[in-house]
Image (cartoon, rainbow, N blue to C red):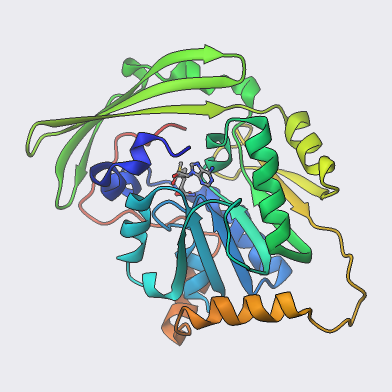
Length: 298
Ligand SMILES: C[S@@+](CC[C@H](N)C(=O)[O-])C[C@H]1O[C@@H](n2cnc3c(N)ncnc32)[C@H](O)[C@@H]1O
């Protein structure tokens, strides 16, 4: 379930500006490079911050999200026409076959029910080609990051071009086992509007995600450390086992999926490819003139 921050147009529009440090995307970019992925699916793509990066390098990218507001923001970004944006989630995907699936920005934690999470993994598996990989990056529960989600520790003012100053802070509302509910408040100085966004996240133990992957016979290849938040996030790299024989011809489903994804977009330009190379393994730079004081929940 998308929390309000991503469903409300006003908040979706400023989401990128409130969370500028996106070095957390590096492991996903690295996996795309290391594995030579040509087709990528970004689940919970939000405003498309990750999806646009591989798309700029000529990779076929589909981004799926259950919230329309961030998809609208993503669509309107430079290069947005290169990505196939899908309103939905991993359980409602059209036929696709991809080499790499990603879930960035802790979006995996928004899927709070164990059965929903398992269905999400099943949907991803169905979209992955044999040997294809899934990368996702949930926070480590033992760090108890929610203990920092209070006004004193999170208050900040962010100057956003076109929106003016935005005051924001978080409040912890509830901790019930692995479920943590918080409220994020945003005050727009330009018109005095106050928006709040309630969010419930599930903090799964490493073993819980390992078991969910094992339940569908996915191979856990690696659990890496997050470059931007060392010791604070697990970066899971899982692989759908090779079931097809080496050298076997593509199945009709693969061919149909390739046609489907290709039919929706124009090819990437060489300028886009350069942008991908430049952006690979580097943090997107915040627009000049923007003063960052605080990120969205970390
Ligand atoms: C913290 S944002 C991250 C967005 C993006 N991945 C990024 O890195 O900027 C979480 C996203 O997960 C989406 N989401 C919530 N529930 C979901 C679900 N069941 N399946 C896929 N995405 C979901 C939300 O709508 C939101 O856009």
